[in-house]
Image 1: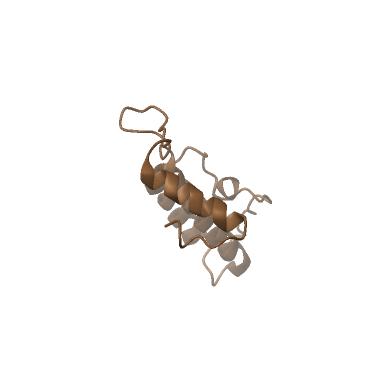
Image 2: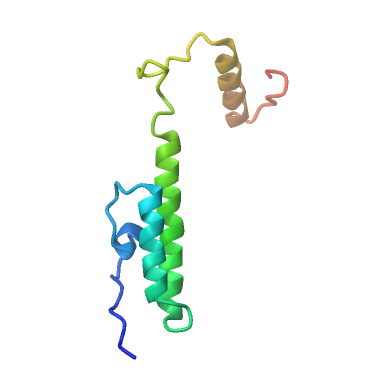
Amino acid sequence: MSELPPLPESDDPFEVLGVARDIDADELRRAYVRLIKLYRPDRAPVEFAQIRAAYEEARMRVTTWRDYSDWDEDDEGEAADDAGDPVFERITAAWTALADGEDARAIL
């Protein structure tokens, strides 16, 4: 049986998986599957665990960035201005009250 090449010694999950940071979720999964076929748990349990952890972190970063990359923009692509919105104002006041150690239930 041939010896497996070592994985990069890095804390960066994208580097461990050998992919670019701007990868999409489908390409990330394909790279992960390719690696776990090579570093099977019966042949390389430590590397398998490292790949699995790197995939979970990279997947979280990729999907979170995709889901929330435009969270602060309105429908026209401009920065949202919530000032003046009564719901936003009440929530902001409640968070401020909580931060000051006050009871926020009366505000909401």
